[in-house]
Image (tube, rainbow, N blue to C red; front, side, top):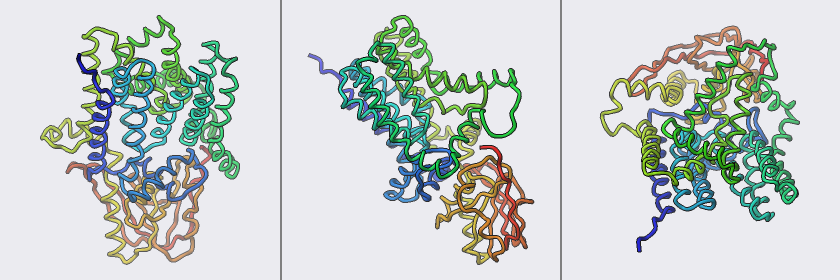
Length: 502
């Protein structure tokens, strides 16, 4: 009798290999934190109930991980790596519960082949923990819909509460589960459990309410502005622009699933439409609702490609279940699709063990991909040298973007609180922290650093310019961009741009 494959073992072998690859990527010296990662790290140095644009979980996780591993790239990104493993394991468990260990394994592999998973499991963004807790919550809630036990609904609510503390969009789980219960005619028997689930989930909203009550509900104004419904002047509806935004959104979402997996998605989608099976509807509905909600918004505003993808994980189970029933030809398509979708990211993430990444077109593609993650550590090293040579070790650092300010705070050895001089940007977390106004009239030195501007201009007037230079930044010996560095003495007047947009 042939021994059945140990799919749990296979899962962990693949997952551990990918963990190792991500750790190697994190240790590449020429690649720094992504600017949003640096911002969230800086939040963890200024702990609060909530932050201007996001709930507190991303900062809490950074606070814990860097307390253990130090203020390092790995100390930040270990959160994303663990969330990625968690997402995959939940999908494996869910697929195994619904179908078989084989389906669970292939569902996890398909998930790990999706670009959306790579982004959330490498770079520690709010999507990392959101996607994990969304997947965990819908798995536990499904178990609750099966047997009606409060146990599953309570733990689903706990998971959803953590998801809500990762990103407010977690609230979409309410209409999803409500629609599913109505569709399956289980509302009457499950209504009390659903209400219990909602109540527990909303506990995760308490930090947001506390902070926004204290800060003029800035987060809600920010979300309204992002959706095209608040802040700034009203604009007439441009049909051409709106459809352009929609098709850009559509293309981005297809790419997030992976072009190599699209045949599986089409086949699985057709199966759901034909069968209308309850299980398959449950797996498809979250992705459809999230996609549709942001598709509608895309006609009003530009949508970032990552916004809807937190709900796409269950599609991997749908595709795995469908393809496991198909011919060997389809399973070969699956194998090639998964292999290519995992292999290509690994090629760009890993150090150049071969000559291939030195080929000019590939080198240019890598430089373009990592442009926003390069140059900050050498820039910080230069600032350390300047502060030492000029005898201004206590000089404060400022820039016109929160991206630069956050990165420099992370990479400077003493991790100082840096400052943002608003020169035309919309409101952000730096506008709520103590700013450069504290230095007005004081005989202190400030160092201005920018990729975009030659000086602070009219927004900050200093008594004297002590030193300035332009620092060329390279990526793997290729020119990348040039940073302007200016050392100023004694801030005379501080006149930052006061944003009206959120």
